[in-house]
Structures are given as structure tokens and as C-alpha cells.
Length: 172
Image 1 (tube, helix red, strand yellow):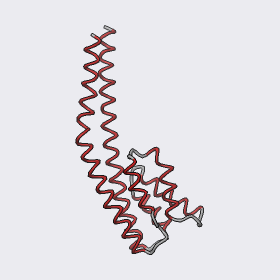
Image 2 (cartoon, rainbow, N blue to C red):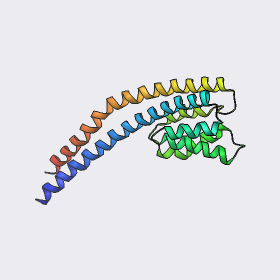
Image 3 (cartoon, rainbow, N blue to C red):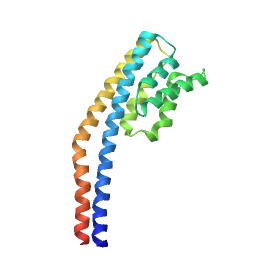
Image 4 (cartoon, rainbow, N blue to C red):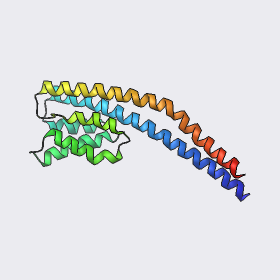
């Protein structure tokens, strides 16, 4: 009886591992969607409210979800604490602080780092153009994440359960 319980436990553990892999794929897509929304919110804040950059970043962080919100809020705090810090430096520092918590790959991070380029240094129109360009690049990364999610989600889920069943059959 104990033997069958252990075999069943193996099947469930492997199935759980497969489901966790599926969850990682989904969270990557969600965080990229939050970054895309945050860029549109930041552009709107900068364009219509014409508040200082730290206020625009703070408002964007408050209206954004996921781990993305913490990046924008932290960049705002860094700008308020050290006025000599540029928007680019604050954003990149906030991104590096949150890097380990983000379920994004290196290519995604490289695209997101472009958001900070010349942030708060150039004029409003140039910043809006760069934000729009970053939004397009994130859209491409988002499509890649969606394709990857569709491709690997079923493989991870079914693969986890099947691996567990195969291990159980081998151990019988």
C-alpha cells in the first residue's frame, strides 16, 4: 500500500513541476503586457499632465500591475531622493533591483532597458518617440512570448504528468 502511495506521489510531483513550468510561461507574457500598458500610461502622463518625470513615473507605477509597478515606483523614489540622478539612471537602477523577481529572459530585459534611454534628458517629443519605439519592441517580444506559451504550455503540462506516470511504471 505504501508503495502505491509513493508511486502516486511521484506522479503528482512531476505533474506539479510541469504545471509550474506552464505558470512561468504565463507570467512572462503577463509581465510583458504590464510593461506595454505602463509605457502607454507613461506616455499619456508625460503628454497630458506635463508633471515632472518622478511624478509621471509614480503615477504610472500606481496604475500598473504586476512586478512592473514596483520598477516605476522605485525609479520615481530614486529620482526624488537624488535630484542629480537622470531618469535613465533611476529607471535602470530600479530595473536591476527587480531583475531577479521578473520572469523575463535576457532579450526582454534588453528591450525594456531601452525605455530608460534619455528618459528625462531630451525634450518631450523625443521621449514620446522613444517610448513608442520601445512599445513596438515590447509588442514583438510579447508576440514571441505568446507563441512560446502556446508551443510549450501543453508540452510542459502533459510532459510533467507523463514523466510521472513513466517513472511510476518503471518503479512498479
